[in-house]
Length: 101
Image (cartoon, rainbow, N blue to C red; front, side, top):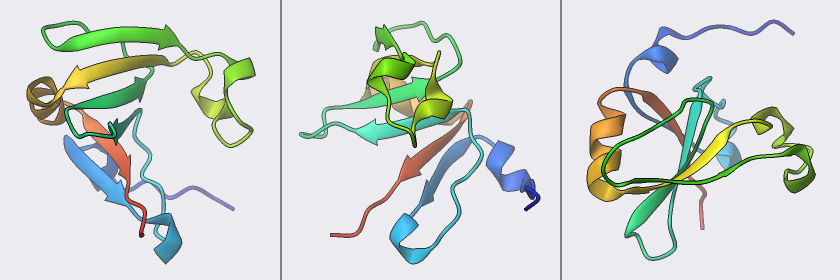
């Protein structure tokens, strides 16, 4: 199966998808999840991020990832405030998984 590149995957902004509806996962180098109480976001990325409101948590290793997340080996995990996330989404394409309840 060949991969089809979509130009929209490389433009800055949030690229959301819903796997339960069979939507494809955008090919972004940054993934975001909203924390439980909605005060900040967790970002997984191959990029090195610095700035106000961005806190480095850890470098992801293969022993802490599942088989489905193995592609993130070597990526960095960050905790980002809502304000910093607003600035990052204007500069980078960010993938977000939206699950149905």
